[in-house]
Picture: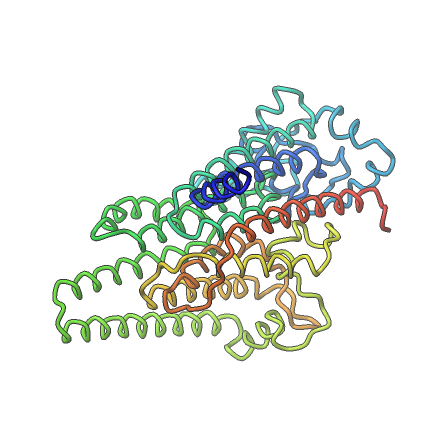
Length: 458
């Protein structure tokens, strides 16, 4: 009887569908989002003071932050250490009421105050609503910030849940990227990075669904994509706009594939390959001309390369390169006390998630295009920051890994090529490992951040 029960149990388990990764994402995202929203210090995100000023300005609640030791609209949490260590944090931030002052007295005018047609305004809409609600509940900096965090996190987490549920391939890569400490902290903040995670994830999900769509279903995406492209140009961060280039690549490839099926003789296949080579050559030439033009206006190709090499770690430099740390694990550079090895664990996890997924991209043209878009986005960000740094190490300063984190699911299209033969098979053990790593690393970031505030390791 026992052996029969065991056999039936194993059979039932084998008949279960795939792990509902979108449900796992929602549970973990909301759980850690709640914790980060309540327990993290004020301004825990990069440029946190600026994001608060931008959100509060949009609802006509410009706040005098000098009452909290913030005399410039800068970045970082160091100014709060004294209040933590003197056990006055709660009374200072949650009980003391804010002082509303004229906007002209704020040391820095946010871009959202200058125009409604930029990513600064669009990205702070939800946090601004949260700040206004918090002010109605109790007009203190702590309450206003916490309510804004909770609202931003809840809305964005739910939207990302539906995106992961809707996308047809690469769900695991989306989930693991969006459960990293960098993503969780971005959602549980007042930063425009939260809505950028949602928007970029939506664009990549649309591109994946277009790739796997049958027959001519992809044509129904064209008109919505025109509207999405216009919205992206107006309200999304500039370095993500290059992602829109994936859609002409997919559409062009779909048209060529349809012609190939319609006229299956050898000449048409040769013409299709010829057109692809022309498109690749054209893109390469345009990219080269663009790089040369930008480099020429910034000191020449030699100078630009001399700055890029140490920034990418190709040549030796004594300065610490923080981009790899801030890509997935370190939520605020230099203030989380996150160990180096944790980034290595996350890189390994991302790679495993990429290798476990099903191969669904039949065109090398699309896979290579996705890789090219990611690399071009990285290069564009570094060139934009070229004026910063340079003395001593030659590194370009100011570039943070979080600028590239939303783009990581794009590698699903690269590794999802049926020409990419490397693959691993254990799916559920990897999901369990992901949950363990997500729980451990997010708690570690929280504990280490608060330990730094209380001066436990100093």
